[in-house]
Length: 115
Image (cartoon, rainbow, N blue to C red):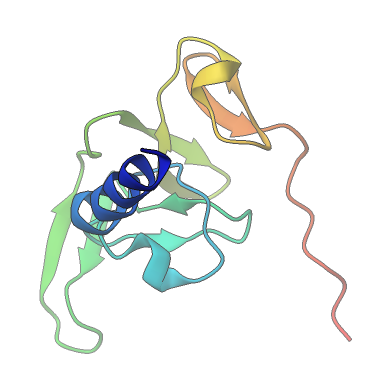
């Protein structure tokens, strides 16, 4: 019976696609999100509140003002990104905590020193 549940979970992940806030290590993990990318902090997100190029160097762009269901647009530094919404920290992925209704990093992201 466990293998049926595991098979269902794997099928849903591949069919349902990624969501904002899902853990990731590479961009392909976030392919289910329009304009999604893997943030350096290790979770899927996407830009919002700005015009985003559709294809590099094409000149074509699209307004990115709305975030997918379950996320909200928030300013982080110079960028506007979609962050997962939450009611409590248990709604957030590991390494994130619920602050003001959105999942935030528990510790601020500090990039590794360059070599």
